[in-house]
Length: 245
Image (tube, rainbow, N blue to C red; front, side, top):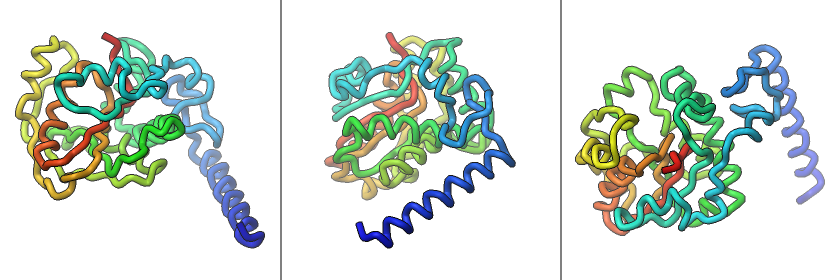
């Protein structure tokens, strides 16, 4: 790198750091878990909470971990990983609940960035062409004003540079909450819920499906099967939370 270019880069980094400090002074950001004020170097979750939240460790085995095995014999998945273990009434569940129902879309982007940084170091995104967030039903979109999976995907895109494609597949049927349903009921609940709209956007591509939480994998399978109708589509899966079975 030329000396002039290096000096310019350092100057720009310093300017961005000053701007972020000033922004934090005028509009302090709080941790999504403990609500304490965060430092300029922290994003979405403070360092103390980030260390405490239970990690899945999926990045050490992206093809044979417990989440990846959910899709075996159901849909061909290249690799799969989630950031945290998700349990009812836990800090992780409260975190994702606020993301979905607390009008906090910026937290989705920030957590997407945090997760993508860790997974990128493990090579998780190698060979992936684009990101498909799991579509939200029109009714829920109108109620919330945003799709939490799309916000997470945009955070991932900020780290990886991968494009986020939102019009290739759509949810044509509103589904009931999966929370209290059995495995069979979850499959039935999402059957026929998605429709491929733009096969040209995904044909022959390696697609990363992004969701907020994966429990039985039924929603991802239903979405993925519809995407695969385009032909030559490879699927990988990423989520913030994973429910240990």
